Length: 312
Image 1 (cartoon, one colour):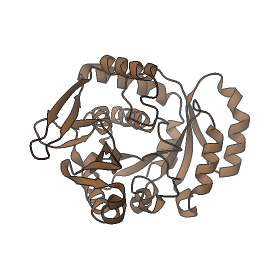
Image 2 (image 1 turned 180 degrees about the vertical axis):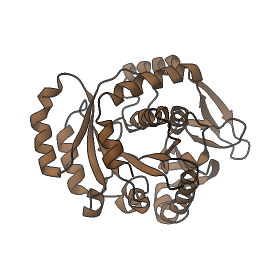
Image 3 (image 1 turned 90 degrees about the vertical axis):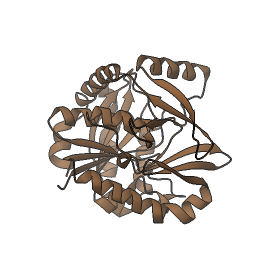
Image 4 (image 1 turned 45 degrees about the vertical axis):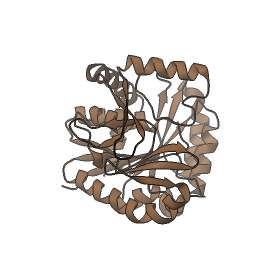
């Protein structure tokens, strides 16, 4: 089986990539496709232990698998980095603890060799069993200091020939500048992979944005595929740059977890001797919230265009 592909990338961390992937997974699943999420490399403190196994993936991919109405699979997140401070992370490979690494060692010795190969193998296994794979990027593809090591974004998209939709968060400001800057910092071959743009977290009348949208479309030669409004939801997002920037953020985060039925269990790994926070969630609560959110996303984007012109 040759799966159809779509990758969601962002102009920065925190633009809503994870929840948009969750929504697309549910939309496509409800239309009868066998769908899987995939994130080649994820840095997250939130680890989900796969039931009846000793393997883990990032919580975000576990929630996305629920949106696909399928079981979490280590192939959905073959490389998981759990930051532990002092520029060091615990590296999980194919669901199992691999080793601790400093950033320099990770980039120089691991990511383009063992890491990239493992991610591609995991991806190919998913392809054999699914109609569509929705890939998620990490951070921004325009981080020019690490572009040659960035297997989460354009390196992977180009390797598997996946079209890309670029998401920008208008709530944080500088939305149009970030779209333009991101596109101009990409190599021409990577620019060609971008097939459209989504503006996320907008408050107000969409008509206000159209003059700016027309200018952006003219400059980057890519269509804006939708304006997703600011949607209050209880789907936990990745622990990104603004996950705990204030007490209010921390309180809101705790409220979302409670509403989603999240449970946190801290266990000590006998092999490695460190604590792991593992998250589970109430499936009934999660199903309702994913359905509600995905319906709002579908009504805000040109989904027909995405299906007919982009997903391949």
